[in-house]
Image 1 (cartoon, rainbow, N blue to C red):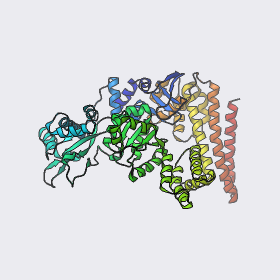
Image 2 (spheres, rainbow, N blue to C red):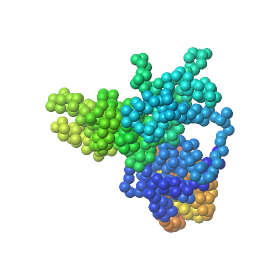
Image 3 (tube, rainbow, N blue to C red):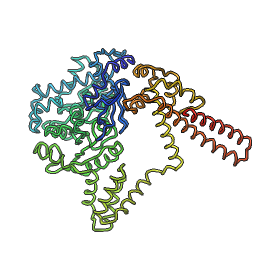
Image 4 (cartoon, rainbow, N blue to C red):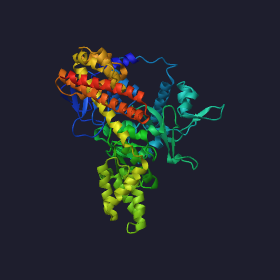
Length: 588
């Protein structure tokens, strides 16, 4: 499999694949464009054919062609590999499986179940009442096909007869995927979903991993829940699932936004009204995994939850998750109906208008607080600030945070600095201030990494410089992956094409090599002098850091009045000074 992955990457034109999603322009050795993973006006996204890598120097996204497809499409590794293999004409050799691998069997049986339910709805006599109900909800045959909607008969053994008795799958397998329940420990099994409209839950690649079943109103009983979901299984994890994501992802990527609603009917009605970038959370709590899935394709989330207390709480919970991922949140305010489904069915134009009139989430939180408490009284102002300030404290961007602080201050009639003071108190209560020496150490470490990467890029471009600078690094070690790569280049670098050099670089160091190489975006090959200067800068920085450490050791020895230790440390310092003088001398 490892060999096949490399073969697929080798046979795939990364510029062609990325170029089908991003407008790329050839600039020197690389192709440049606007990053598809974050919003930007100046191109900082690069693709390099020789290295087979992409890198955004704005948001940090980067990797090979497989990772790009995974991120842009929101799909898993295997799905991306299969798509690229098909395009490259590579027949994937399946892993050795025990009876075709249990996961594959689980996906097979879920796919067959979805087809079975869908056939019952679209063509079966048993599905006639369900078809009429959906048409009454303005869900036509085209939408039923798009979302693969189905119907589960009232029978206790519909799926059992079809998948176990006819298709030969085991009871245990159907139980594992949540299609059946067991009568008793030693008894048989029966259909879990009965008399329900079935909404298949698809992963980002379109594979059915679970179901939500809505009881058909004419078959509802008092003791039955309106909605029933598949249990958590090896395939289905509720916290990672967004209903409609497979159908919406193209529009989400194109519009760089996702409209989040609560339920399946909300999602389908919104989609039908023309807002095809709609997905449903299947509940009220947006999770970190769901935000991550959306962040790969969009930079804005429009939340449209039910106009009740639970919906408001869900909106507030979503703020921190989105802020952490650098996404902005707007709120679609419900007017003219109890939920998006009702509004979109009654008036698609009204629903589209509400989406476009969405307000910033902080505006929504502020407005809600002013409706709840009396801003003309001191106690009311106190309550309003207690409600709003914790959310303003979550805003990552300091300038944006100050803008909202000013708006709140104006509304309650106080000076902006008072609100900012409350926000800062909230922030300082959440994080410990780093000590100055710690911060300084981090800055210095980042500078060394930056210089090391600069040298790596130059050495890859001018490999003949290796012979000159290699001796300078004797007795000096560079930390981290950058240090390992510099050592490898100094030991193995020779005049060869970049793509040949890349093949030989150890796997774990290739990404570092690619990023360093793409950072050097000049069309011209660097001169020998440029490489030497970069090497000297890095060495001097490392030596300077080591000298600081030695001086601290010496001060300690002096305080302890340990003259022998002091002499020993002084000798080390002297050696480093000589080394630094020699390096400077190399440049003449």
